[in-house]
Length: 65
Image (cartoon, rainbow, N blue to C red):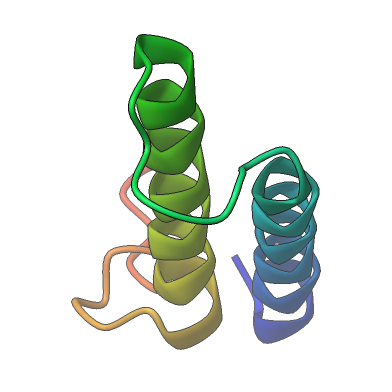
């Protein structure tokens, strides 16, 4: 994946995290659905970091070439 593609995908994951964060209520989540939404927000932010910064070089390697 080249840098432009990774940037676009990272921005999409940040957008997903933002939309899901709008559904969260302030405070500590007390229901299973609120905990699941918080998990989705954290997962989307993690994936955004992986795509934007590629900290372990996973995306810059091309295993199928």
